[in-house]
Image (tube, rainbow, N blue to C red; front, side):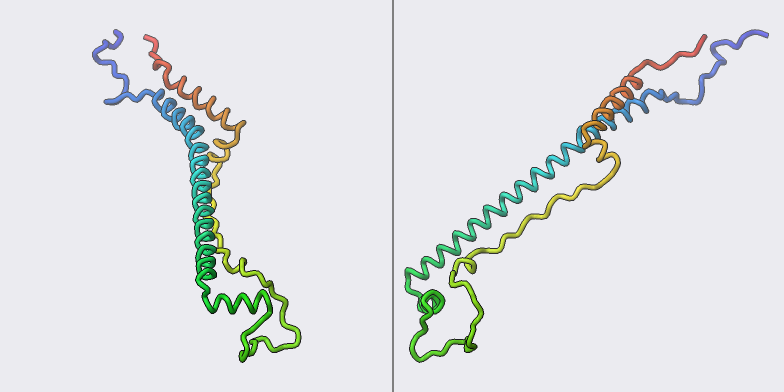
Length: 167
């Protein structure tokens, strides 16, 4: 019996897939995850801080506007404002009117008008992060180093030349 000729020897099906591609792609995916997930978290926190700064800025602008309107009304001598200030600050009411609180001991309230001028501050929603094992590993400094090293090792294995059979 003679050895089969090169022409009749077959190496497999129509296509031959190199297993190195699987190592290369999985290594790149692990390294990308180790880099992109913490960057995404940092971006989400930066956007939250930006939204928080914008909310504080708009709160300050609304506060200044309220105080400016109050000052303008006070300078113009708005009758209802002057009467309410006289009643609240000086405990004086115009002649011929009766106070609404007729009890012997009225509730102790602040005479200051400033709490009513303060706008309500609304915090922006804090970012929510999807909790997964991959995210925990990618954001933990010790595990992240191992992920990058493992990904680099997989890329190295993927870049090695394919093995040739003995022949």
